[in-house]
Amino acid sequence: MKHHSSLTPASNVASRLAIAGLAALAIPSAHGTDGYFDFGYGIKSKGIGGAGVAFPQDSIAPATNPAGAAFLADRLDIGLSYFRPDRSAAIGGTTYDGNGSADFFIPEVGYKHTLNPDLDFAVTVFGNGGMNTDYSAPLFDTPLPGVPSNAGIDLTQLFVAPTLAYKIHADHAIGISPVFAYQRFKAHGLQEFGVPDAGYDDSYGGGVRLGYSGNLTDWLTVGATYQSRIYASRFERYAGLFAEHGHFDIPSNFALGFALHPTKELTFAFDVERILYSEVASVGNSLTPANSVLLGQDNGPGFGWRDVTAIKTGIAYQASDTLTLRVGYNYSTQPISSNQTYFNILAPGVVQQHATAGLTWQFRANWELSAFYVHAFEQTVHGAGPPFGVANLSMQQDSFGVSVGWIF
Image 1 (cartoon, one colour):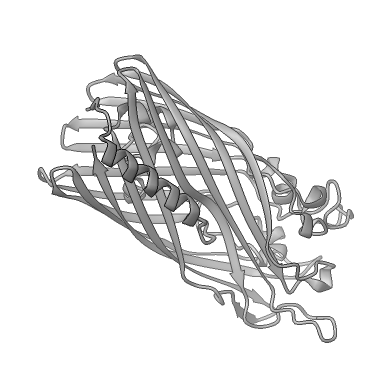
Image 2 (image 1 turned 30 degrees about the horizontal axis):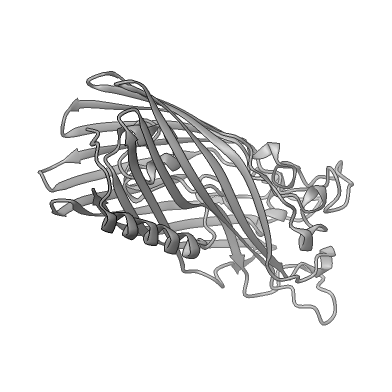
């Protein structure tokens, strides 16, 4: 149920301080599940497989669908997730461990406030995704003399999304979020490909997310959302690596969702999302003999990622007045084909199946504590072989997180 209220001066100051602080700190360590996108946004959503297009649960929900803000109580949510991926590459019978950096912490913050009975404001700060590898031994057969080839990359992405949601009817809302993106990238050990160790470089960009959410009946809610391509400035230091002279835009994506409420205590949520990795040249262009263009050039090679479809489903059950339990499952199609594994030694985002669980405990009248756990099952993509070498890529992941919610 939606609550209309205004912030007290104290709560207003506290909210602004929390948002400002988290905005400064929320540069998330790289992670990736549905390709290199996070599988869900918000601790509660992650407990049900990342679903949330038609089922907003906290003030992080507008990161999935901005229209969801219209059906939330005024609240502030602050969360932190721990993420541990296990990634490796097997080349010529030797397995290389890519876990030189293994432990990552990912903050998130959301704030929602009712402006009037039909108009709501929210802002979310969250990590969209990323990728990290850090190999502890030389990977390639012919390293340059005196040049270490312990290769790896570190890509992180931060989104800030202010949101307006408008109720066009008591049970139907639309929403819009201008999306501001910050990216940070570093590569090392790629000198033999003409890419120097240039340290971290920054990129900034923007786009927009649109959404709709509606209660068709007392037991069925539907939602739809679309995020445009995020056009970003170039990574100037890596103009010789990424296609189009260092461009690394964030691909567009869209999703449909529904939530079934057979009882007031029980909700079944289901989303299907499509991520268009192929529209960004530095991600989607293939590394093939037919592509003789050099790295970094227009139409140059990329990671050869295919578009991904992600299925997100879960159950939320309110076991008592103070306890809600969640379980979920997330499946995504494979972005990396067998003939593109060699370059993806640097970005082995191959996991496809995730099992999730979570809970929320209301420990005071206006306060709640939420938590989730997810395990992404080990997945291996076997390389097809020449012309560039045989590489088998493997990854599995574990993550858990907690958040505190304050309902005004």
